[in-house]
Image (tube, rainbow, N blue to C red; front, side, top):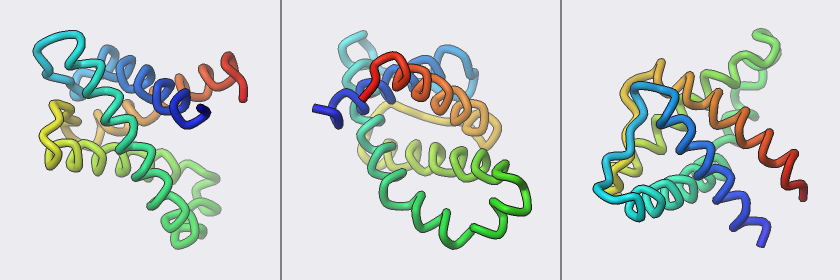
Length: 122
C-alpha cells in the first residue's frame, strides 16, 4: 500500500511541476489520460531513482561532499531528463524540455513529495 501511495504522491508532484515549469508538459488529450500518464511516469521515475540513484551516490560521493550536497540537484535533474526519455520510448505523452526545466522540475517534485510525505506520514 505504501508503494501505491508513494507513486500517487510523485504523480501529484509531477502534475504540479507541469503546471509551474514551462518546459515540462503532459500532452494527453483527456484528463483521464493525463492522470494515467502521470501515474505511469511516476512509476518510471520511482524505478529510475531506485536503480540509478544509489549508484550515482556511491560514484559521485566526492562531488556531493565538495558541493555540500548541491550536486544532488544536478543528479535529480538528470534523472528527470532520463525519465522523460524513457517515457518517450514507452509512448507516454510526458516531456521535459532541456536541463533547466528538469532542474526546476526536480526541485518542485522533491519539495512537493517531501511535503506530501509529511502530511500523509508513513
